[in-house]
Image 1 (cartoon, rainbow, N blue to C red):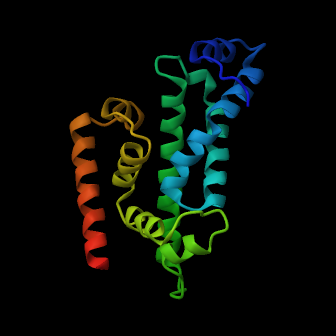
Image 2 (cartoon, rainbow, N blue to C red):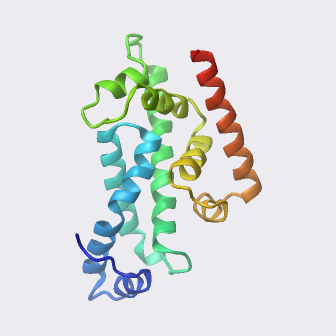
Length: 184
């Protein structure tokens, strides 16, 4: 396993044209797994998460000149990843709405059939409940529940007030709870 490089060192490398490429390679190595799981919890599918992760890093590379180092690199990358994930979900929703194929499996069944999914049926149902949330509630729930991200950090990532995030999280929890009560 590669030793992690400090945020400050990475920012210095990214700001110098001579070390920018090497710095970005380190960023990709250091943050890929964490960003992958942020994305995967929103888009659900492994293959889609890989695609969105790649788009996230492409967008980050192209936007390096606009990164001023005011926030942590992970916060900046998370914002890009979440926005890319939400854009992907919105596009998928449009495709599903225009699709005439009514024979699609439910998300829980799709997950159970996914070679990359290693959870049980309850985990698959939780993912189905989360997928039924509006995009922003889904992102807020995932960041708070799975990543245990503080509301102050989420506020920086999503550009929303902490109060609105707390409300979104509690509404999401209520909807997920209701989903499981309906399953009983």
